Length: 208
Image (cartoon, rainbow, N blue to C red; front, side, top):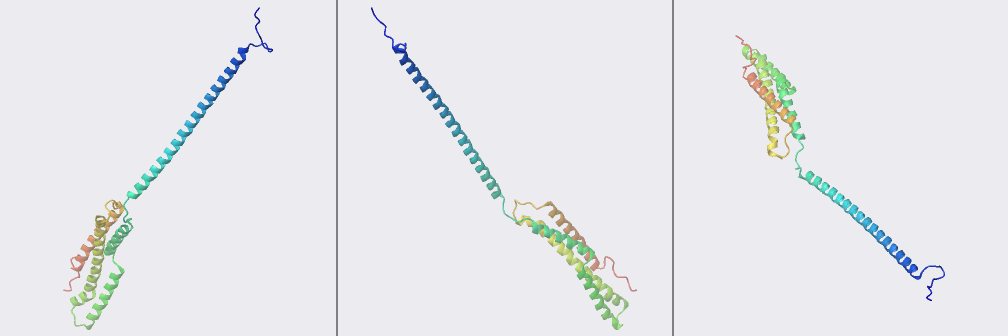
Protein backbone atom coordinates (compact mmCIF):
# COMPACT_ATOMS: atom_id res chain seq x y z
CA UNK A 1 0.00 0.00 0.00
CA UNK A 2 1.20 3.53 -0.80
CA UNK A 3 1.72 5.71 2.23
CA UNK A 4 1.43 9.63 2.01
CA UNK A 5 4.20 11.17 3.99
CA UNK A 6 3.24 14.09 6.23
CA UNK A 7 5.71 16.01 8.34
CA UNK A 8 5.44 16.33 12.06
CA UNK A 9 3.55 19.65 11.92
CA UNK A 10 0.87 18.12 9.81
CA UNK A 11 1.57 20.38 6.78
CA UNK A 12 2.28 19.17 3.34
CA UNK A 13 5.84 19.72 1.96
CA UNK A 14 4.73 22.18 -0.78
CA UNK A 15 2.79 24.42 1.56
CA UNK A 16 5.85 25.87 3.30
CA UNK A 17 7.51 26.75 -0.04
CA UNK A 18 4.35 28.45 -1.19
CA UNK A 19 4.18 30.53 1.97
CA UNK A 20 7.85 31.56 1.58
CA UNK A 21 7.25 32.54 -2.02
CA UNK A 22 4.16 34.59 -1.12
CA UNK A 23 6.10 36.32 1.69
CA UNK A 24 8.91 37.20 -0.72
CA UNK A 25 6.46 38.57 -3.24
CA UNK A 26 4.76 40.66 -0.55
CA UNK A 27 8.13 42.04 0.50
CA UNK A 28 9.00 42.94 -3.09
CA UNK A 29 5.64 44.69 -3.54
CA UNK A 30 6.20 46.64 -0.34
CA UNK A 31 9.68 47.61 -1.49
CA UNK A 32 8.30 48.66 -4.87
CA UNK A 33 5.61 50.77 -3.19
CA UNK A 34 8.22 52.36 -0.96
CA UNK A 35 10.41 53.07 -3.98
CA UNK A 36 7.46 54.66 -5.78
CA UNK A 37 6.73 56.81 -2.72
CA UNK A 38 10.36 57.93 -2.54
CA UNK A 39 10.31 58.69 -6.27
CA UNK A 40 7.20 60.81 -5.83
CA UNK A 41 8.76 62.60 -2.86
CA UNK A 42 11.91 63.34 -4.86
CA UNK A 43 9.81 64.61 -7.77
CA UNK A 44 7.86 66.92 -5.45
CA UNK A 45 11.09 68.19 -3.89
CA UNK A 46 12.59 68.84 -7.33
CA UNK A 47 9.42 70.66 -8.42
CA UNK A 48 9.48 72.81 -5.30
CA UNK A 49 13.15 73.56 -5.83
CA UNK A 50 12.48 74.54 -9.45
CA UNK A 51 9.59 76.81 -8.36
CA UNK A 52 11.85 78.44 -5.77
CA UNK A 53 14.57 79.02 -8.35
CA UNK A 54 11.99 80.39 -10.77
CA UNK A 55 10.74 82.77 -8.08
CA UNK A 56 14.26 83.92 -7.34
CA UNK A 57 14.90 84.40 -11.06
CA UNK A 58 11.68 86.39 -11.33
CA UNK A 59 12.67 88.53 -8.36
CA UNK A 60 16.08 89.14 -9.91
CA UNK A 61 14.41 90.05 -13.21
CA UNK A 62 12.05 92.48 -11.47
CA UNK A 63 14.99 94.03 -9.63
CA UNK A 64 16.88 94.35 -12.90
CA UNK A 65 13.86 95.93 -14.57
CA UNK A 66 13.50 98.37 -11.69
CA UNK A 67 17.17 99.28 -11.87
CA UNK A 68 16.88 99.71 -15.62
CA UNK A 69 13.82 101.92 -15.21
CA UNK A 70 15.62 104.05 -12.64
CA UNK A 71 18.66 104.21 -14.83
CA UNK A 72 16.58 105.31 -17.82
CA UNK A 73 15.59 108.53 -16.02
CA UNK A 74 17.95 111.15 -17.40
CA UNK A 75 19.97 113.13 -14.93
CA UNK A 76 19.36 116.83 -15.10
CA UNK A 77 18.39 119.94 -13.17
CA UNK A 78 15.79 119.51 -10.46
CA UNK A 79 14.02 122.80 -11.23
CA UNK A 80 15.04 124.53 -8.00
CA UNK A 81 17.03 127.19 -9.84
CA UNK A 82 14.21 127.80 -12.30
CA UNK A 83 11.71 128.15 -9.47
CA UNK A 84 13.96 130.62 -7.67
CA UNK A 85 14.41 132.61 -10.88
CA UNK A 86 10.64 132.77 -11.40
CA UNK A 87 10.08 134.07 -7.87
CA UNK A 88 12.85 136.66 -8.30
CA UNK A 89 11.28 137.82 -11.57
CA UNK A 90 7.90 138.32 -9.94
CA UNK A 91 9.49 140.14 -6.97
CA UNK A 92 11.44 142.49 -9.23
CA UNK A 93 8.30 143.26 -11.21
CA UNK A 94 6.42 144.08 -8.02
CA UNK A 95 9.24 146.33 -6.80
CA UNK A 96 9.23 148.22 -10.11
CA UNK A 97 5.59 149.14 -9.50
CA UNK A 98 5.66 149.91 -5.78
CA UNK A 99 9.07 151.54 -5.64
CA UNK A 100 12.38 150.44 -4.17
CA UNK A 101 14.57 151.66 -1.36
CA UNK A 102 17.40 152.52 -3.71
CA UNK A 103 15.01 154.45 -5.97
CA UNK A 104 13.70 156.43 -3.01
CA UNK A 105 17.21 157.27 -1.83
CA UNK A 106 18.27 158.27 -5.33
CA UNK A 107 15.20 160.51 -5.70
CA UNK A 108 15.84 162.21 -2.33
CA UNK A 109 19.48 162.78 -3.29
CA UNK A 110 18.45 164.35 -6.59
CA UNK A 111 16.03 166.61 -4.71
CA UNK A 112 18.85 167.82 -2.48
CA UNK A 113 21.04 168.48 -5.51
CA UNK A 114 18.21 170.48 -7.11
CA UNK A 115 17.77 172.56 -3.97
CA UNK A 116 21.45 173.41 -3.94
CA UNK A 117 21.33 174.45 -7.60
CA UNK A 118 18.28 176.67 -7.12
CA UNK A 119 19.50 178.27 -3.90
CA UNK A 120 21.34 181.01 -5.75
CA UNK A 121 18.04 182.72 -6.61
CA UNK A 122 18.96 183.42 -10.22
CA UNK A 123 17.00 180.43 -11.57
CA UNK A 124 13.44 180.88 -12.77
CA UNK A 125 10.48 179.21 -11.14
CA UNK A 126 10.26 176.59 -13.88
CA UNK A 127 13.93 175.79 -13.49
CA UNK A 128 13.56 175.49 -9.74
CA UNK A 129 10.61 173.13 -10.10
CA UNK A 130 12.51 171.01 -12.58
CA UNK A 131 15.66 170.95 -10.41
CA UNK A 132 13.89 170.14 -7.15
CA UNK A 133 11.05 167.90 -8.27
CA UNK A 134 11.40 167.05 -11.94
CA UNK A 135 14.88 165.55 -11.78
CA UNK A 136 14.01 163.58 -8.64
CA UNK A 137 10.85 162.25 -10.32
CA UNK A 138 12.80 161.17 -13.38
CA UNK A 139 15.47 159.50 -11.20
CA UNK A 140 12.81 157.50 -9.40
CA UNK A 141 11.26 156.53 -12.74
CA UNK A 142 14.67 155.47 -14.05
CA UNK A 143 15.29 153.08 -11.16
CA UNK A 144 11.76 151.69 -11.47
CA UNK A 145 12.42 151.02 -15.15
CA UNK A 146 15.66 149.22 -14.34
CA UNK A 147 13.89 146.92 -11.91
CA UNK A 148 11.13 146.30 -14.46
CA UNK A 149 13.68 145.46 -17.14
CA UNK A 150 15.44 143.06 -14.78
CA UNK A 151 12.13 141.35 -14.01
CA UNK A 152 11.35 141.04 -17.71
CA UNK A 153 14.73 139.56 -18.63
CA UNK A 154 14.72 137.14 -15.68
CA UNK A 155 11.26 135.85 -16.53
CA UNK A 156 12.17 135.30 -20.19
CA UNK A 157 15.35 133.44 -19.23
CA UNK A 158 13.44 131.12 -16.87
CA UNK A 159 10.85 130.30 -19.54
CA UNK A 160 13.53 129.66 -22.16
CA UNK A 161 15.72 127.54 -19.88
CA UNK A 162 14.10 124.12 -20.68
CA UNK A 163 14.94 124.57 -24.37
CA UNK A 164 18.64 124.43 -23.47
CA UNK A 165 18.35 121.67 -20.86
CA UNK A 166 16.95 118.15 -20.74
CA UNK A 167 13.78 117.78 -22.86
CA UNK A 168 12.70 114.77 -20.78
CA UNK A 169 12.16 117.01 -17.74
CA UNK A 170 9.22 119.36 -18.42
CA UNK A 171 9.04 122.61 -16.53
CA UNK A 172 6.67 122.67 -13.58
CA UNK A 173 3.40 124.56 -14.24
CA UNK A 174 3.84 126.82 -11.20
CA UNK A 175 7.25 127.93 -12.48
CA UNK A 176 5.70 128.94 -15.80
CA UNK A 177 2.88 130.79 -14.04
CA UNK A 178 5.18 132.76 -11.73
CA UNK A 179 7.55 133.54 -14.63
CA UNK A 180 4.71 134.88 -16.73
CA UNK A 181 3.56 136.95 -13.77
CA UNK A 182 7.05 138.42 -13.46
CA UNK A 183 7.13 139.19 -17.19
CA UNK A 184 3.72 140.87 -17.04
CA UNK A 185 4.72 142.98 -14.04
CA UNK A 186 7.99 143.87 -15.74
CA UNK A 187 6.23 145.04 -18.91
CA UNK A 188 3.78 147.15 -16.91
CA UNK A 189 6.54 148.60 -14.75
CA UNK A 190 8.69 149.40 -17.78
CA UNK A 191 5.79 151.13 -19.52
CA UNK A 192 5.00 153.22 -16.44
CA UNK A 193 8.66 154.13 -16.02
CA UNK A 194 8.84 155.42 -19.59
CA UNK A 195 5.64 157.44 -19.15
CA UNK A 196 6.90 158.99 -15.90
CA UNK A 197 10.35 159.75 -17.27
CA UNK A 198 8.92 161.54 -20.32
CA UNK A 199 6.39 163.47 -18.17
CA UNK A 200 3.55 161.81 -20.08
CA UNK A 201 2.20 160.52 -16.77
CA UNK A 202 1.89 162.89 -13.79
CA UNK A 203 4.04 165.55 -15.40
CA UNK A 204 5.25 168.67 -13.59
CA UNK A 205 2.80 171.56 -13.29
CA UNK A 206 3.35 174.59 -15.49
CA UNK A 207 4.99 177.59 -13.81
CA UNK A 208 3.29 180.14 -16.09
